[in-house]
Structures are given as structure tokens and as C-alpha cells.
Length: 396
Picture 1: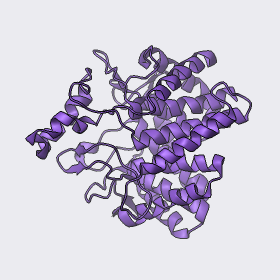
Picture 2: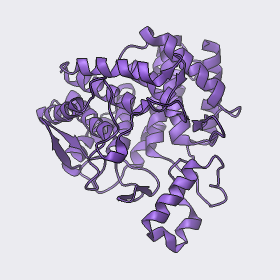
Picture 3: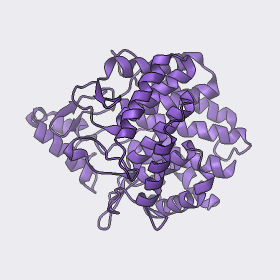
């Protein structure tokens, strides 16, 4: 199994490096130069249909419709996280994926790139996506509109970079993201806590995992700056999220009727965020919610202790985020070794069924025609980070 994972990872690593971390995304249809030349671009329904058409089609029309391959900040952050894990592995004597010197240089280069991708004009460091994005008919997120989700992944990656490079300027610029969370995002009261909005746009304040990622950012700021407001505001977001956890340990995605599904990787995000909050602040009062959520996670989302389901009540489609996130979640919760068999089974299934011979990973696996398109952020960056975590735990 170790050889299989190592060989698989090297193929993925070579592919991503050859593409220079640029690629397409499931949601980048509005980057089409053809669509941007049409009058339909001003119509919300047309934008939504265009994005969904590209996202759902198992055939990739992006070259035909002139969608360029670009950097995605969240994807770049995931690559940076992965390289930081490979550096830790090299520190332990395994340089199968690069020497310490080579990996340090790569970390510095990607750190610089990630900082250059920040969205300008906000209270602190913040990141968005490299494409316009129509979310239902309610919201049009213009290119580079910062979101708490993208920002959180970038913050975590840059902090891991700082731990290695000891570059204080990187830490300072990264931690300013706390000001973005507190000053630019809206908050909605829920019980004794609050829910952070998904982005700077008003009204999208119903997504549980997004609010928890805001808490995660603030907890990192508290860890390094010891400003009590950061811990207090993070705790309120965790309070609200835990109040919204159902009796069986599950979470729905969001509070709107159209957001009532339960899925694997957002559950993983929730568990990761609450655990990170506890680790960074020393407040362990939410452990029972982690334990209950973890039990539901394991019981509901892994068929035959092997197949990584997307939703709790059906198997297909299987999304590449699901096998990737479970490895990272168990690593963050410091439960990798206790669950090594599950993680190895899931990763083995994923390599067999969802990796192309060129090295990249597929977007979704279905009973019928699967989507085998290579998406740099959604598929490859997530798997790169997950497999680097796996190798750190198994090869060190």
C-alpha cells in the first residue's frame, strides 16, 4: 500500500508541477470568452445555467469556449499545505519527494504567489476565486470577491509556511485576515452565538461550515496575537454551529430549505474547524460535539469501510473532495493512526477508481458516465494535500 500511494502521489505531483498549478474549475464557466461576448452575461438565469452546464457535463467544453487555465487561490493554498507536509517528512529523513532545501525553495515560491493573489480593498488579507460565480439566483460573486472559505484555507497554508520559513512578514500579513472576518463579514445572531457570512455580500449568512471557518481564522489570530476579542468571537461562532448540530451528530449544510442536505466533506470541514479552535485557544468545552460528529461522519459516509460517499443517504455521485478531506480531518483531530485502516481503504479505492493514468484525479465517480475532467483546485490540489498528509503519517 505504501508503494502504491507513493507511486500515485509522484504521478500527481509531476502532473501538477508540469501544469504550474494552473487549471480549470467546476465553477469557472463564466470565464469563457465566448460567454462574456454574449448579451446573456447580464441575465442571472443564463449565468446560472451556463455554470451548471459546464459543471455537470462529463465532457469538457472549456477549450472550445475559450476558458483559460488560471491560478485559484484556494488551490494554491492546498498545494502549499501539501508541500509543508512534504518538508516535515524530509525533516524526518524521507526525501522521496524532495530534499529539505528543494522543498523550502518551493514553499517560499508558492507563499509569494499566494500572497500575490489576495483581493484588494478589504480590512485585512482576504482571498476569493478567479471566476465570476452565480450562486442560485440570489448572488453573483464577481471574480476575486473574497469569501471566508477561500480565506481560511489560505490563512492555514501561510501559517504552516511561516512555521517553516520563520518569515515574520508573512505571519503579520496572514493574521490581518482576522480584521477581514470581524470588519468585512456580517454576523447573524443565533442563540448565544452568531453565524459569520460566507462573503462580504449581504444575505449569505446561512452556511454552517463557512461560519466555522471564520472561527478557525480568528483562532489562529488568537494563538499568535493573544487578542481576547478574537477568541471570544470565534467561540460564539462555534457555539452557534454546535447548537445547530442534530441529535445524531450530523449537520445540514445551511439554514435555507435548499441547503438542507448532509454531505461528507463539509462535515469534515466542521470537525476540523472546531478541533482547530480548541487547539489554538485551549478551550476544550466542545469536545462532545466533535465526538458525536465524528461518529456520524464515520458511520454515514463510508460504505463498506471503503467507498467514500458524498451524501449520508446515497452513494453517488462520489466526489473527490470526500476521500481527500477525511484524511486531513483525521490528521487534524490527531486520530490518524487509530483510523489508519479506514483511511488506507478509502485512499486505495480512490486511486483505483478516480486517478487517471496521467496522474490527475477525476472530479466525480458515477454509476453511469463519470466526470473525468481534471480540475486543479477541486480535485488535484485537494488530493495533493491529502496524500501529503497520508505520507507524513505512514512514511515518517
